Image (cartoon, rainbow, N blue to C red; front, side):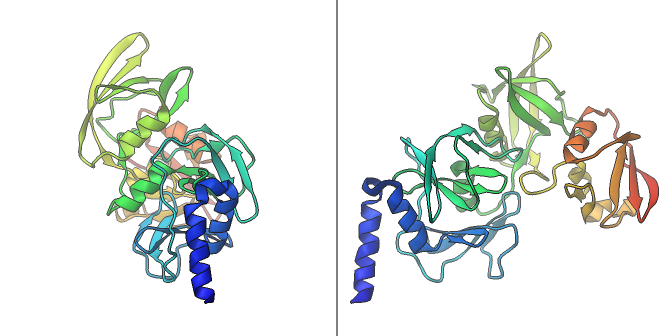
Length: 326
């Protein structure tokens, strides 16, 4: 009898979610146990759990996205009314956890893997971004909001590759501006300050939309880019390569050479192709082309602005040494 009562209660909760508003969403989060310590464990269709966790779960992982710290695992409890992605026009959204719901709006869209979305109200992690029907608009992480387009792609695709054409962009003075470029792509035609006008013959209005098109494009696919440089209109053909960093991963362009760094510029990963440099985990990067750097943003800008990134100064146990990269 108790099980029947609970089942009817869940059914009523699911059917009346839109009418019950965010109070119903709080109850659904509690019933589904979607928030556990500092992780999100959201029931989704197919009897699976969508996890956001900075530490890989100690269970069988069906799929993982290291860029966004997302995992998909089997839902052993099989919550009967999973969360759905909202694909309709939303009349309102709220940051919802087990105790409160803060209604507001997204004030800054997610710009690819460069930066997550921002909300108009103070938000805390962990929480879900939901509409009044309790459909997912995004998930709230320590670095900001991962929007629903990225969650939906993760759930639908078999692999978690992202495309890259060697640029990082942002909205700037009515222009989708190229902020940094990857100089290790020898055929990279872009320059910092380029204003992107069209992508595949369609007008580019925001950095967020452009980065989604690039990231979600098939690896090896060709694209036409129209841009404004100074007073000239230029058109280039580019190919999508495999994105190496961004989101919760190191993103300095040196990942293209097989090197990853933490926020304090210590090496955290050395791929096979970078072993020729004879570096070690824990070596700290101090200079690029004899100019001091203090964080990964410095690295990205310095590398982008350099015609030839050749000399890197590292420190290991108070011993400093140069390596030459190409």
